[in-house]
Image (cartoon, rainbow, N blue to C red):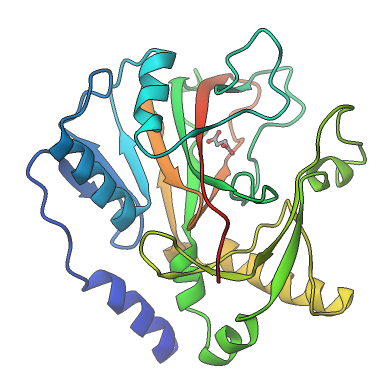
Length: 292
Ligand code: SIN
C-alpha cells in the first residue's frame, strides 16, 4: 500500500477516542461503525447519553443499536434529536409522511438501496443521516446485510495529486436518474430534485473532507467533458466498491436500529435472500447544503 494511504489509515487508528460513561461503544472495524449498548431508545435519553451518542456518531459514522422495541413515535423522537425529519418523497397519502417502508419479498422486482449510494444527494440540502429499524429478517436465517463505506477515508486514501485535481470540481446530482437508468420516467407529480454540489466537501460538524460522489444520482462533473467525467467517476466508484478496508458490514437481527451519516458514508443493501422477505422502516433527517 502507498505511504499516503497508510498515513490516512494511521491517522484514524491512532486518533484519540471519546471516553464514554453512559453507553458502551464496540467498534465494528477500526475504521468504521460501532455497536452501541446500554440504551433503551423507546425512552427519553438523558443529556449525557445524548451527547455520548452524538460523539460516537461523529467518530464511527454508523451506529448499531440491538434489541430495541420501538414504536414509530419512538423512532421519530430519536431521529428528531439530530435535526428536522426529512419528508418521504412520494409517500402514499395514507402513510406517515416521515416513515419510509423498506420491504422486499418474493414478488419484489428490485429492492431499495441495492447498490452503493448515499440517500438523497440530489436535494439542495441532502439528508444528514438515516435511521433504519429492521423488524423482519429473511427466514432463511441469514442474508440482507447492509454494507457501509467510509467516504472520509475514501478521500484521504487518494493520492495527493488526485486530491488536488478533485478539489474545486462540482457535479450535477439529478433525482430522476434512478428511474431514467431503469428505462422509466419519474412518477407524475414528482418534483424532481436537481442540485450541484462540490465533489469534495467538508463534514459540517467535524470539518473533515469527504469524497462526495454518488453513482445513482450523479450525471456529470461540470468542469470536465462527458467522457472525462465518466472516466473519473467510474474510477472513484470503483475505488469505493473495491477497497474492503473502507467497509463495514451490519448483520441485522429483528429489532435492530442502524443510524448512518449520509454526509460521510455510503451504503449498499445486499439482496442475497430472494425469495425470502425482509421488512423495516426508515426515518431520515434533513441536513445542510454541502460546502467545499
Ligand atoms: C436504504 O436505505 O438504501 C436501504 C438500506 C437497507 O435496506 O439496508
